[in-house]
Amino acid sequence: MVIRKEEQRLQVRDNVRGGAGRLENRHILEKEAMFGAASLLTEFYFDPGDSIGPHAHDTDAEVYYILEGELTLIEDGKEIVLREGDASYAHSGVSHSIENRTDKGARMFAVIFNIPEKA
Image (cartoon, rainbow, N blue to C red; front, side, top):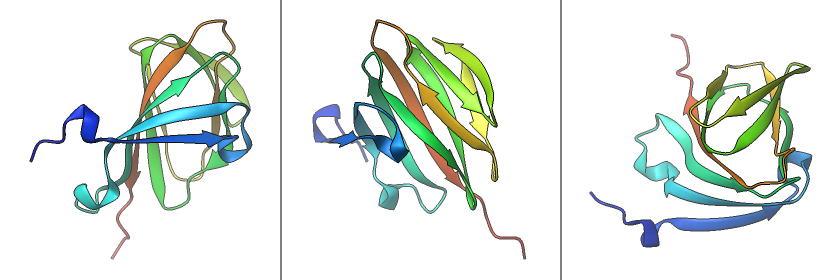
């Protein structure tokens, strides 16, 4: 199945997870199309000052991949600057947030993977 860019759902939200600004994201695939393996596959657009507030994952894990620009990741209180081509992984129980502290826009690819229950 092919899902053209113009068919992908755009979403605009204010103060995502308590963060600052208004984030736009493009859902590349919807949850139902990921066979239970993931719940989010999206591209985020960050204007200067935009952020996703601190949150932890209990039953899933999240990967960030920086497509363009520079974003500051705060993971369990430690700040790390991520640039184009950098990736980060937050496993279950890790608190993280991400901010655009620059004067330029940034784009980030994000995936939330479901962690299978142990038998």
